[in-house]
Image (cartoon, rainbow, N blue to C red; front, side, top):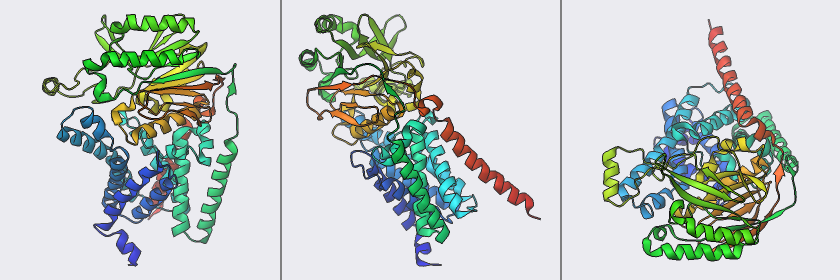
Length: 505
């Protein structure tokens, strides 16, 4: 056995290296943006999988994902314990649970690939591995309510592969990045003609992406308009304290006064430490001033529906009349608590949040403000990109309101901004992203940040946005082309394997 093969199969070295590779891959995402680590670390993982038994491949796959999510979502500890008040042990249990679930996906993938004959080396690296990887990314994006964070494609917003996003969406970009990983693997391990094929594939794909970046998939509709995003920068640990309530109201009133005159003024998610019903007199006074200044308003507010007995995380549009959008994708252990009643009682005794929000209906339609039609999302539900596509036939602008104050000075707000940029690029629409303490941003239809706030600073972020109409190919077809391709590739492998077995005497 050659030295490198002996090392790769070593009982301790390979799992440790897999964990470190996963942690290193997290640096391909914002705010570090070392994008080459995405396909580079994935190619190294696949090298560890070569000739590995199903059990060894499962272990290595699990630890790679564990490293990625330990490093890439460490900020959950801040959200759960530091600001959420959960005991250290409970916070760690929830974090380990998430890492274990994420690791299980790639453990299953590794075990399945470990049982699969590689057959043609080039086809395996350039087609089979990328297709299997992306299907597993897609599954973890919806299974058990889903966690689509850290999909490989997000790391390529500033590379030529971003040109494919309006055609194929984030999973299509993930497939092409994974194919690039397979090509790197072939360059290192393949024979001469396989290396040539790998290099040719890289040149064609990355060149095509650069060419596609200039294609205008959607078109401007109407004149630009000025928007103002209000960032109150009220820290999460102070926001709901009664002593700070008046200060918060004064901050948002003063900042909104500065913002008036913009055609559209946007507040972040649940901006006020009040229910909508309690804030009506305060909001009415602001609306009168805004109406006089010809400004329409978007307010992120919590609303209690007394008739239905439901609490909603909502976004209210105030123009000639009042409209609401209610958040559909709620955060487990943040906005609803899938726990038994006795744990809920314990949470109440510990003065922890224990009341569930209710999700909004799946089809709510667009909001109307600033003379535009707006497709809205609240907080992390913009990570579920395909769910906002149904509104694009009507929507001229996108808006996302978030409260990333839950994650402090961590990588989470930057990762979230990266996800929001992908949504703008996929849809071919300008995006307004208003947050409580940053990063607030205005993003153009190509996914470029036009204006961005500083974090933890009260600020009014002004910029011009351009309404757009038309549908990108991805908006029309959603994820079906990518999923269909990946499924077809794996089906071809299974059929070929069955035929080989059937032909044996």
